[in-house]
Image (cartoon, rainbow, N blue to C red; front, side, top):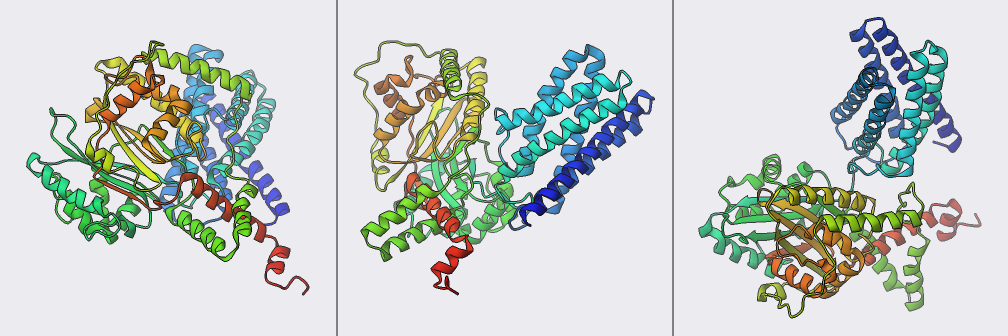
Amino acid sequence: MSKSTRIVVTIIVVILTTCFESAGLIAWLRLVLAGENGLGYMCLLAGELLELTIFVAYLQATTTGPKTRSPVKVIGAVGLIALFESLLWVFALAVYHIFGPVQGLIVLAILMHLKHDADVAVLSDTPLFHQVLTSKGLLATGLEVTGAILFFTLTLNGWWLIGGFAFLLCNALEHLVGGMIVSEALGGRGYLTASRRPRDLTVVVPIAADSVERLRGLLETIGGNIERNTILRFRQSESTHFARFVILDHDSTRAPSLLFSSNHDNSLVNYAQELSLTVADGLDRVFSHSCAYVPRTAHHGLALAAFLRRHSLRSKAFFSAYHDSSVQEILRCTAKRQDLEKKLDDNDAKTVRDLSALSTGPAKIASPLPAGIRAAFGRFLGWVLEHMAGIRVTTPTRDRRMTVTEQLIQAEDHKVQNQITVISKIKPGLWPRIFIRLAFYLISVQAARSRGSLSGLTTIHFARWVIIDEGEALYFESNYDGSWENYIDDFVDFASTGMNVIWGTAVDFPSAGCRDIEAFKHIIRNYQRPTQVFFSAYPEQTVINNLNDLAIEESRQTLTASASVRRLLTGSFAK
């Protein structure tokens, strides 16, 4: 589709979607005032359905990618959004009549903003609350709410034509902004195209007390030779970034359990199907130590997906350095860069690596606030949250001795990458449980807006926080580059507020927080648990290596996209 054609199509789509939604809204309000509530609502719902159907069709026509999503899910998503938005208008009108115009419009503004964020999440398969604080998200809400204010104010006073035109204009602008938000979130994929965003899976299953040592021995055999053992080789799974098994016997008051976690591409069902075709025998041997597992479940994709979903725990916060890159894409880009370097001398190889600077990189998410105000507000909010978590400035603790087991030492510093598994007890009481969920919401928003780094740390591939043990403990895992000491030091230097807010609710956390670095290291080491099995799809690659390789490939594709460049490279420039 040419640029001029796309502009014309976009204008037509904006006009059609705006007219359908506005017509439905006007018909609804006129019928409601005439006492025809049921018929009015049907008109409102029909207008929303027509608007969304045209909008989704337009998104798919103007983006690219294989159509891998089920049409049933597409229809369901469109119907769900239309139903929610139509009910939102009904609710706003009810509040408007009961409490007055000011309260009604405040409620409408809040709900409409959350609705816009949910629309983007459903349409683009991105996390919720991704657009809450972005300038475009706020602008879209402002336009629609302004249109609603003018519409309700004018039409309820008899100015139907002017009120309808005002809403039509504001709604048209809102559709343009909303289309840009969803298109950016789709990243050129198309609505029916499955997201390549890496996902996290955390599964905890009970194990019998008399099976713990046998299971530990089996896992240590797998972990001792992760690439060549004959039991379970995650290398056969093409969509697994990282995976680990951890025996959880940290709490003597609870039965022991087995934790399996992975960072993977595709949906859980597709991932389970792949595991059932590649590593079913190994998973069967491992999970057979759990009383919750039925033998040979791993050999059937749907059964395995049901088992994993039944025993999975949702992460309260999740970070990925690779927002839209699959395992195979990372490996392919690394191989291409290495192949180029082998064919070139040192100077040319440096030039190839410098290609990453030509990449525009992932788009930065705009903020509605200037950088200085945003930084000041961030420091103030951090100070408030630290005090809410119980962190106070006190004299650092001295002469702390860390408990470091031989298992922890042996599992670290074999490759450029390392792993950490931490389980901390949450302080008793209602407040710590409420506060930690607030902290995780804020961190989730930050992580969703991050691109390649978490609070300035560029050494973390993936990280997650999960509440376990029925809300009494916090599980944290991270796959990172470099040594344990440097990793903790970087966290204190770049993300001390975040660490204090999260672990300030943990039992025995130092009162001065992680800035009391020796006490912080002491408590983290004491919380840390051995990881029996740890797999990485790219164990020799750092986060920066991977991001540079992806950027080099992006730059190469950009350079060779020009027809003249392609002719020059193929020797046919003069033809």
